[in-house]
Image (cartoon, rainbow, N blue to C red):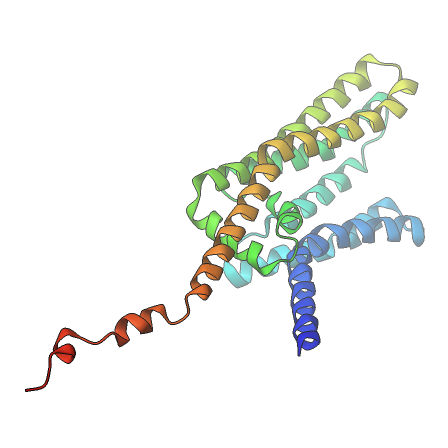
Length: 255
């Protein structure tokens, strides 16, 4: 009986993990993976790889608008980035311009994330939530309660996305400045260093100001709810006992 319960619990947790990661996989991993597979694996041109890898985010965005009159933020952002990349693929000329154009993708993503924060739908939540709830039903329920009732929790959620938006915009600025002030040979490798530093800053600062506090609140809320459940379970039938107590009239001697 215990093994059966454990197996069911593990199966439920796996389904929960998949459900949490599904938007991230479909909206981000699939189009990016498709682009590199088509371009490097099948030898397609950059233009064709971008067009074909845009199909999934385009369908997801269109379906969201038609079905629920809402824009799927992450899918729309990936689609927008692909469109920008398509336009930039026609840009040619000076090597410095070619280096600088790489920053356009970072700036596009950064602006999209900041806009999502302004609209009250922080885009980076989709990527961060699975790492916080870890497929645990108690943590998922705690997340929902905090999101609905805690202004501090929602503020940390917005801060996480805002940090990433600002970091990506800053990366764009640094790349452009470097492209026109440093030797081209230096920027060829420095561009990768700038990207790695930007990602590290995003994780560290975003974790300190957003994801970290949110995870702590979720864990505390889940433990608190579990503790209340255990306390309620330790006094089974307490209310029934109160109701079962004889009324004063029942205690009076019969006449």
